Image 1 (cartoon, rainbow, N blue to C red):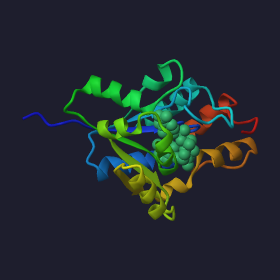
Image 2 (cartoon, helix red, strand yellow):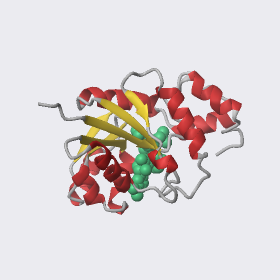
Image 3 (spheres, rainbow, N blue to C red):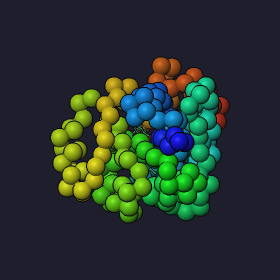
Image 4 (spheres, rainbow, N blue to C red):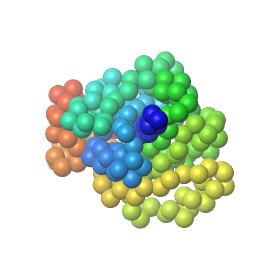
Length: 203
Ligand code: NAP
């Protein structure tokens, strides 16, 4: 009998991608016995109007650079190439049609983003298509989180990842003020950002 594909989809803006994201994906691979993790940088974000997000092409390329050396990581252009606002449910339905009804899909993202789920387009349909995995740093209020998920009638797996103390916002601030980022993200990603002057002008 053919083994069912267990595919993790790591959704995020990745502006920029950092070790917290990479550790989260690696941890999910093991904890959920996944065959591979597909990083899915957002195209035009559904939310986030409060700041200018770096172009999808730069964020995609930084994600490729960061994941290149891991044998079970890959990067998708699905959302980057989709015109207009991106909804996770559309992405999952597209992946479902690519991989067939037997594939098991796991959507992994930050807990704060999952909390937003109530307001997402077709969140219940999303939960029907995939397992939701919320990644959080230790100390996050998990009881509160579970209450919100239960109220929404959604089953969410939670994963605590200490490396998520690293944040893209902090990295952008550090790069803008020329403070060190060496141990927060892959050196090649930092060099790419520097070379393209991505975070020099502040946030
Ligand atoms: P965000 O609001 O920028 O991030 C919220 C928090 O989660 C931040 O602390 C962020 O840290 C963290 N985070 C984001 N992605 C993560 C990941 N893959 N692993 C671990 N932590 C992560 O969230 P976002 O990046 O815009 O959205 C996350 C995902 O949810 C994307 O795939 C997006 O398409 C999806 N989403 C969909 C809808 C919709 O369908 N309507 C609406 C909202 C979000 P960093 O800043 O350090 O990454």
